[in-house]
Length: 376
Picture 1 (cartoon, one colour):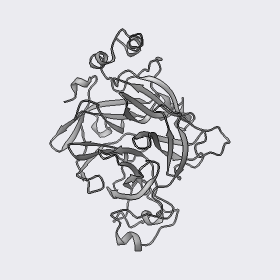
Picture 2: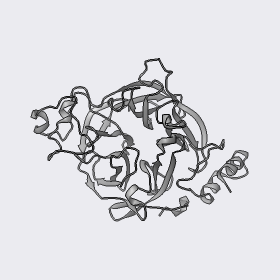
Picture 3: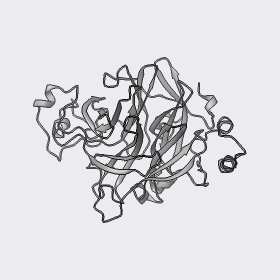
């Protein structure tokens, strides 16, 4: 039974979502159709669970190479079973050309993530933003809010992260060492002998730290964190957000100095924090990395490549975007990755695979087809 036909049965009530979730498999890399029979358009995305539903937010791509720019905005889909997705429309729209908005059509708007604040009752969206015609020089973080999960979201602002604040693990080298000019940067993923010889941290301290590939994580105590590639992508920052989730708090730490990691995806299991990341090779896939920590702002220990089997050098020809906890099934997680197709952005495919655990590390194996029952 194909996904489109099953979606029709779900709408008419002839098949229940619970039964379909167990019977219908995930098919990584294949076209994934929504309730309208269209390929799901939510790239570089993440999922929020609220009031019995999953909400998938991602970049709305358009056809051709120009579709890699933000021509529409952030798309939203909803589901009760993670298999069958209902098109909820565009949650955040970019502004028209000529508006001089920071999110004007043609900007770069990547990796949108949404979290719910139980205190303010607001849905908060963060994303990596590069204003139109600026390339990747902005390295801004955009924020939008809504009263409803599906939107519309109202764009609030975009800026650099933690302006005026040193990280918790700042060293004297940062505070007293020479500050590079704006034109000096880490190019091509290469570093001098010491990763802080080029003191990007101090250079950007006053105006705010760079933030590109990013993710959000809400801990068990309700505190939310922004995880992002910073310092010309050479170092990862993990930053505590304000109580309303719309600001940086000034509390953050640096991790994986000089490791050039992108695409961070964080999750928590049995009191430990885990991260999955990629290297920095543009649209081309590369070998994944993983790490574990006892404290989110503490020391992180690298665990190596979590992928097992063929095509692991390219993370199964994908790049991480989110690790999804399966609701109601403690200890079950799903790897969410993107198989980018920059020549025809709208045709990017999704690689979802079960996350398994072996000792202190998590592993991901390729499966042509699988169901939620296959997650150990």
